[in-house]
Image 1 (cartoon, rainbow, N blue to C red):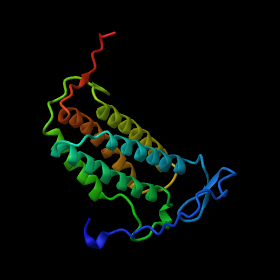
Image 2: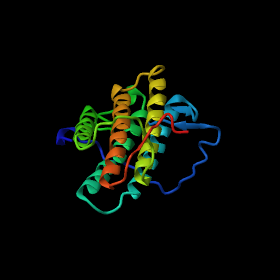
Image 3: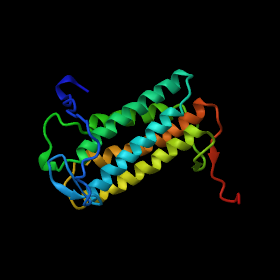
Image 4: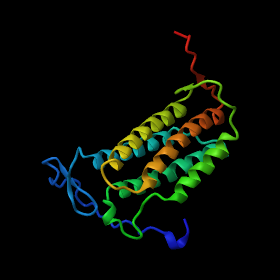
Length: 202
């Protein structure tokens, strides 16, 4: 990210975790608005939070080893920070967005596309759909992919009712594709065979 486009550092001080302010089923957005905890906006960024936890779990499954694995871990860690930025974007109504607030950007989306192209160039072309599995890291990245797709669906539903930044949906769409490519890359780096769909195998 260029220096002129840097986000503000968060001003967070959590000295007490429970507040009792959500006991009636509402929570506050960044702008202070109180909304129901089952609203589309909360569903969207709550699912992004779930995805972030799943990505963290996948990172813990990456063994120390090749430079490729180190790079994959670094990219997934960066994605965790981007997911927090996306959560900030989704937790803020468009009219309340301010310069310097953490968000996902077109630059983030373009970087995911370049990283996918780079990884995909090292993989054999697919001749069937793949089944999640073969190794733990592959399966965990597929779990991340499916949660990402759900986050995308929730965000599309939100966009149908409220104005949101188009980068929110675009980022989740690209990230789900990246997680698929990275699941295949993980199998290659760990020298584990991919499990391919065989429709007549019952």
